[in-house]
Length: 173
Image (cartoon, rainbow, N blue to C red; front, side, top):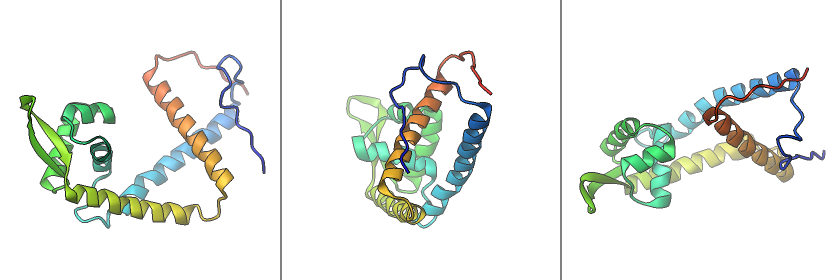
């Protein structure tokens, strides 16, 4: 099966979706979200301490970028600093992160990934990888790449729609 995706079509050239296609896509996304809510929790249940899914959101940038203030983590996660502060406190209590004074501003703290946090990320990656390998066992590389690109595009478009002023909706039947 060959599927061609028009990734680079300008918005003016885009054809409006039919209501049936739009509804089918929305139903598929909703089902995927329902499934996705349970997958990470199943995967992280085996990690000592029960790393919460939001913990993953905070630990990955610490691993990738090093120590950060809560405000930087909040900006990355797209949530209020108070939300991140509570989550960081829980991660610190469980030993996944370490806190130290910011040498440039004694009023602030830098949050860093602890060895236990790094181990939890690695274990979670292993569990998620095993789950994805089993789930995609019957997929070929081309289909997986195509879906990856489309999911990335959908995520970007959904994010843009959520943060942009509302536009008039065009619908075709």
